Amino acid sequence: MRHFNILIAFFIVFSACKPQNKSQEPIREPVAEETFEYFGAQIVDYNAMTSGMMLKKYKSMAKTDTLASLFSGRVTEVCKVKGCWMKLELGNGDETMVRFKDYSFFMPRDIVGKEVIVNGVAFVEEMSVEDQRHFAHDGGKPDEEIARISEVKKTYAFEADGVLINK
Image 1 (spheres, helix red, strand yellow):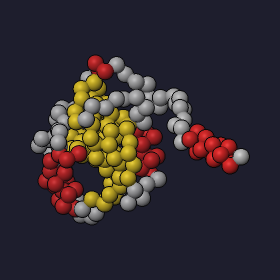
Image 2: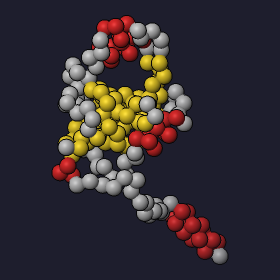
Image 3: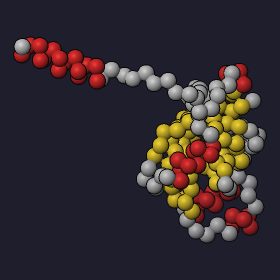
């Protein structure tokens, strides 16, 4: 009887550890691979969140939170110096600053207005005046606008390890 109880306990533990196969509907329909240009890690567009969904995630995050994410958004600005960062529209006038993991790849500087998919880590940060001025300069902002930057700003940030640009 004791061996039978051990066998049953073993069976319960083994079946509880079995992965569940849950079929999920894609959040966003996948697109044929030929329609994308890859940068960084090769990623897929399957189950990418929309920018509106990502904005809701950002709104619920605290400064110390991070969130592994895959989402799509429209490019509003790119670093004019060498494409080392870009900004994506989230909706309601909000945007996220996307930088690239380990500074290992850059974006073409002519992609403003294009739809992209980014994979990486989202976080909320407080950007210093110095950093804001640096990014404004790299974005080609006029000196008068750069000089008006005078206080620390809460920003939505993203470190991407892979980017897909819709051709």
